[in-house]
Image 1 (tube, one colour):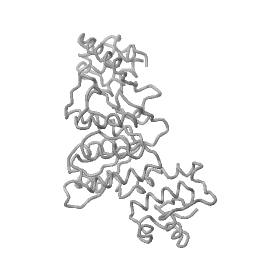
Image 2 (spheres, one colour):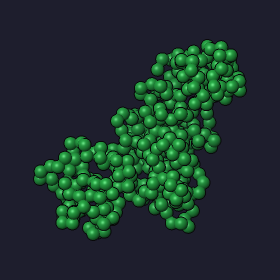
Image 3 (cartoon, helix red, strand yellow):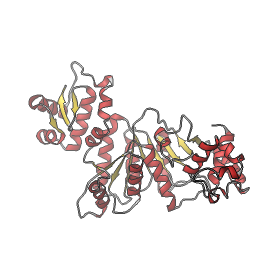
Image 4 (cartoon, one colour):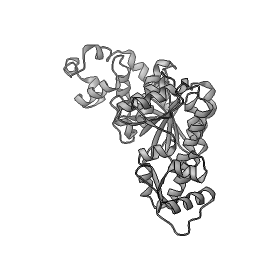
Length: 367
């Protein structure tokens, strides 16, 4: 992106009453960010939905110094930046009406041709939530998805640490500028995450951490991904907001069910009950609903090979399916005496080896 365009976009962002969707409308009607700033006010007021209140702060002279300072920060810290209409801007976020007009990033992020999954949840995550999250990511690891979260306490950092552990790329979406880290206790994870992904934000270096920023951060989490997974949530909280945003973007939402009287399961149970989320009990549910296994089947690694070596649980499952024909995951796990989460992982590895294949209705059979 040319520096003149970046300056113009930042100047528009600095206008107090202009949001991302209004800025995009102005650019669409006038032709470019630079032309919006040079256009006569009377002409801007003729644009549907653009009133005097929205543009009254557009030409505030104080914006120039603020933009200059931010440009200096970007240059000195080698911050990456993308305009919403550029080819290398995240494709899924590009389709969100309120997606950032300028996105800032740090690290080694590569979104090209990748499956992207957001995982969010309570900061007071239980042992069950941690275990489910870690097992989910371990099972998904062969598919190599990018794991997106908010770098917060609880489910967020659990998901991102698990992604790093299994060699997956992970992106932390921040509710503040890239000159700081919140919570401070997570500074120790920054280098690992930047090596295996990085950070996104649309907040400036002058934007201090504030809880009101969570809404803006959450729209990026939801917008980047094919689907959002909620692992434990009370009946109110940021995770439910992220789920609602994901639904508004027409993205898939999954929620992990819990006991009816568990306070940290109320939010997930409500999402499922009100049909705002698919019930998620294992990685196999997500893989099936997103058709990720169908894409993997098209790759050479899943074509049937001669003399494939099977080990331990793979042999058990292969022999069971070979004798009994197609079966669902729960039955396979029960009959082979393998925990369901582990059976899902074994089945996925066997599919990648080309010895079994998934079928509609969450069935599996020998190739």
